[in-house]
Amino acid sequence: MDMDDTTAVGLVERLTRSFGDLETRFHGAYWDAATYATHENEARSAELELGLRRAKGDPAALAQVEAELEAGGRDRILRRQLEVLRQSLLGNQMDDDLRSEIVALSNSITSDFASHRPQLGGTEVSDNDIQEVLERSDDEAERRRAWEASKEIGVVVAERVMKLAELRNSAAHAAGFSDYYSMSLALQELPQEELWARLTLLEELTREPYTTWKSALDDHLASRFGATELEPWHYADPFFQTVPSNGGVALDGHFAGLEAQHLAEVSFRRWGIDLAGVLAQSDLFPRAGKSQHAFCIQMDRKEDVRILANIVPGQRWVEVMLHESGHAAYDACIDPSLPYLLRRPAHTFVTEGMAIMSGRLARDPRWLVDVAAIQPGVISQIEEELHRTTRAASLLFARWGLVMVHFERALYQDPTADLDELWWQLVERFQLVRRPPDRRAPDWAAKVHIATVPVYYQNYLLGEMLATQLRTAIERDLDAHLVGAPAAGRWLDERLFAPGASLRWDDLVRSATGRELSPEDFAVSLTGSSLEGNGDRAVGSTRRSRETQGE
Ligand SMILES: [Zn+2]
Image (tube, rainbow, N blue to C red; front, side, top):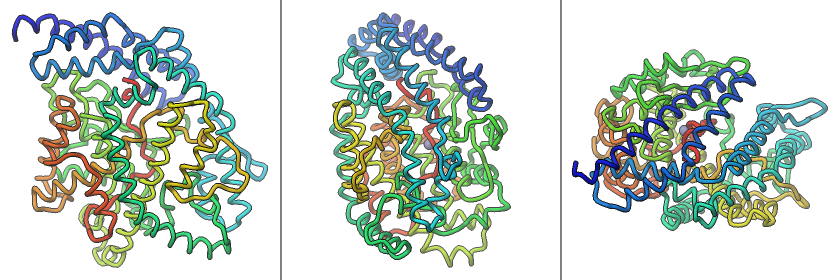
């Protein structure tokens, strides 16, 4: 260390101590609120979140960090810590009133999403009830009512979401950005032009296979419903983003006696990655007063990694547990000798990529035989159908994700634009789903991510691309199948997990896979010429936890 580094080292140590302590306490409260949703727990979690954001909003700390970065030089690890600190601090610079207003408005919308229950046929229904109708009902009028019910929440929150977008823009302007979208991408180290070049390529590569697949589906639905024009309620979920659980191969019967957490543990143990400790401190089964979602959280950036899940028998939760275990393995295997600020994944989309690759195993023929111990004869009969379903899931999710990323960019460019109109233009363009005649409603606002997990969706799309690129690279380097290969676990540990955030995501992807991140492997997997590594997004998986937002 030269003399110059002394102040920088002191600064990093001081801020690490302060933020690390606040973060660990916030994670504890966040976990408590997710597992026991009492009013006290929620209030405590919100209060600690505000406290953490306030601490990171310290303008003097930001000025010091920027001065140290401008001084140049520095050892690589020290410089990287300063960069990470700069993003954390910059994203939270705003006056105290604005910060409180944003947190309060965002929490009020979240709470409405959690409590809103539309009426259907005279009774209150949940998201699961609506999903059930859209998956199973042959009654068109009932389907239409269910779809319309799913959009009601949009009317309830739309004005507040627009207001929230304006407030977020104010914070971005104060930090010197043109809008919140640009700020968020900058803080996520995703240069806009590069990101959009990849998204445009993804759009081009998926257009033809999607059109072909969708047209076959439409023929099938038209004859099922005796309809000449298909409407959005003819599809199997409110946003047409996942393949219906009865639309592909039904594996539920084969998984019935197998516990999802056990299958996940075995999958990773065969790679030499021990998740027994993680699972022991996790909260895995449904219970009243507990979050219905799934996530993985790195509590203290040491040993304490936990999964929240709501496991019930069947394929869906097998897939979710594999996905969340992918996040957990990453968190648990980061080099513990790295400094606190770098003991985290290289990027949100990189850990999503790992999780998506793991979740896809639930439809992988080799995994179904080797790990889930389903009879090879059973799997060989449905192998083609497994691949078709996984390709369909990837295509569908990619085209849906394009709607979301285009919409969010436009939302922050002008929150007062005709968003209802814009939403349907994008849905028609990317998903090829027709707007119902005379439909005028804020249907965009019914998607919870737009309000509560802003500028996040690009991470799912990049994660889909990376998941396929990772698997392709592993199987090429090892000349072996991913499933059950201890060498694959070593590859992941050494090349992907261990460096934590000490490398920027682009350097990490290049050093791990030997090339730039690209949608090309993903596109090849959609053509049907490849029998390995076909995509399948983990249904119902979520962003991993709130602490990655707005940092
Ligand atoms: Zn995830």
